[in-house]
Length: 505
Image (cartoon, rainbow, N blue to C red):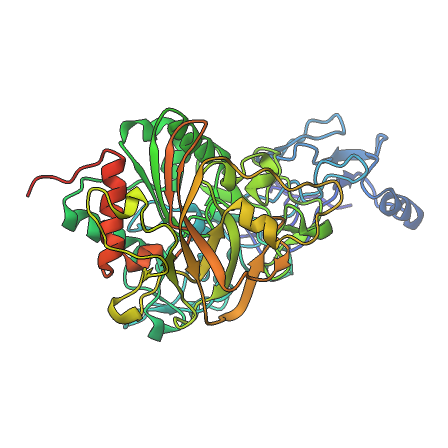
């Protein structure tokens, strides 16, 4: 007879010096504890039941059906009230809310997140791309490889995953800690290849900050999590910038921007791949969750060339039980809020970045109050002479009308939406040189092809539901701020139209 000591029973982990460690890379399905060893036939019956029927009888000392699908407490169905506690954020909802499938819990492999100072508060998209958070320090400016890779890790067992990599046992990454190091947020960090000079996160976004300060505009900086916590915070501002690569949004953040615009606010969007995928946060704001899945026609999922994703059915978040993946699935399509939708990407190598071509030279934004002297077809959004930096690259956005032209197959049960009314197209963003692993997407995020290199569209939109939007449609738009005279004049005209004036010199 075994006589256990006064120690906790750990499922999916071991006790090491009093702490949970050696976490299991597997799924738990209705674990139970008996007062005796089960016969082989009983074990076979439990296995055949696939977790759909809870075991009964006096021999059952504890059983955790794992029906909660959220939180850290799990109830005991045996009647003995041996409540369980989840350590380190197990992953719920990995089969979705389908009654024919048993609830399952996936233990998290890594140890508890480490708290560390960071230069800014976390931005959702940057957290999703935070590969190798425990990377070795480097002497020179770090050059980060493409998204699924990071720098050399400081220790072979340190966590190295992000939203674009799998865990060691092959499960997709659905949760990332916010209290972890953030080395690729360095203002000196470059994006591969180093020779292009392109960057993401702080270095990219800082171009706008420097320009605003130099031009005499007063501004504050808020992170995604600030807007998530207080969606009404935007009401204190004359206009709002969406800067850089703003891909991941929570539904409260999307609703906060939409409500602000409906009340007559204005937005300047210098971003591409904007408002594409949904995230959520736990109650204490320590864990961010996102769910990309591969499903029929890749609906509500990552595109076929996109980041690692889970099986169809796992797209429901454990934090709010709502569908994850593309924000369109939650009724918050970016095209109906800010006028453009994600239309593709390429791995940046500098030379594949394109430029803007003027479509409406007589438009007020090109002429009031500062005439820019542009002609139809003239280019801007590049360094003097057409060199780097150039605006149209890495990731980009298009109008729903253009995406409809790129959509050749509509999935069963789906339909193309009606394009919003009132959008004014003022410039085309065209890429003449293909990039590495180019991906042009249709409205349903399936692979398509470009229309003569058209990658981004620059628009001005006075929304029928209220609010005004200027959208540049490309991640690289922020890259050229401060080096292109025309782009700077255009931004000054946009801010003037939105009622924003610089401080008197």
